[in-house]
Image 1 (cartoon, one colour):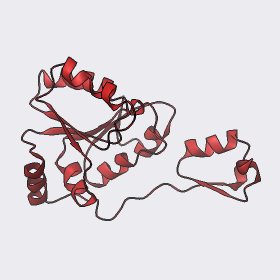
Image 2: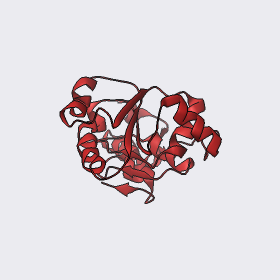
Image 3: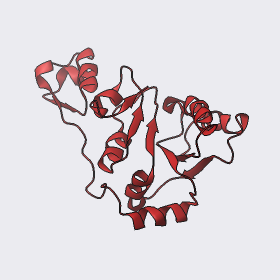
Length: 183
């Protein structure tokens, strides 16, 4: 009812626009305005990257996941894929973000796959450390089943961090704009 009666609707992706249309909104009243990135998210200097590595105890190069630890983020498959990479590459997986619903089952493969030494859960990372976290990563891995937007994609790109994200009918491929590897 709100979509049908709104004077105007603003959404952040074309997928969001299509969702509004499916709910009966007039296409002429829907405007796509993508999210921006905070100005502090730019490639970090080497000193900031080194300081962050020391602060978080990150010794090896790392692949970064940043987001809520939930089934929607596809952490189980990320961990299974990482186990294959870890067998042949000297790289860790850093999981940053809040533990959300069903996080226990999402993180269970760490033990099942024997990755306790290679997966580092660092929890919430303060805004002032994000640029260094992204900049020091080998890549951001965000293989979500669904993203409404996927702000870590644009944040990582703003910091010069390559992105691997999921394909599918959600916002991640649109937000990546052809500049990420889609899986």
